[in-house]
Length: 199
Image (cartoon, rainbow, N blue to C red; front, side, top):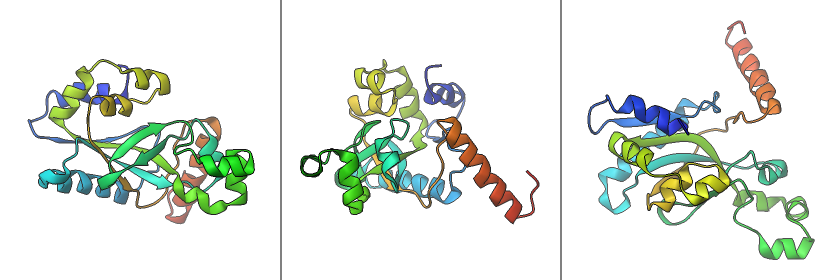
């Protein structure tokens, strides 16, 4: 399988038509159940209203530090009307042209004007879709932008899918590097100690 969606599609083949699939990516071990509920609600309520129909629903978190804006391991998302995704990228998007001209670099602009961080949204590894769209999506050939950025959601966008993006209920830790794994382990240990669970 080329992606997590491909693995889930194999299982979804045996599910009833109309089933709603919730795909929590393996690199999001600490995602909040409230975030999952929000995304499912956004998907089901949006598709009850044909005016704001979507094919996929997912989540974002505000970015709180400059390193995450600049990191290619942190996927960013830009949304437009109706909270629909316009693009996902490993690069900092949207590009702050005037601020970069003013300060000489994006890092310097963000350092000098910390409020600019609010512009950036970190994509959270969670997708909700119905069985039929998932099966159709995984039969589509990998797209040009997907191959460039190594982000499967770009295949959906390139094929005209509508992706609704809602704010996560709380922040999570995406595990993409050894440092992320250590941070996730520390957070889990702290939470487990607080509720009396032995790590």
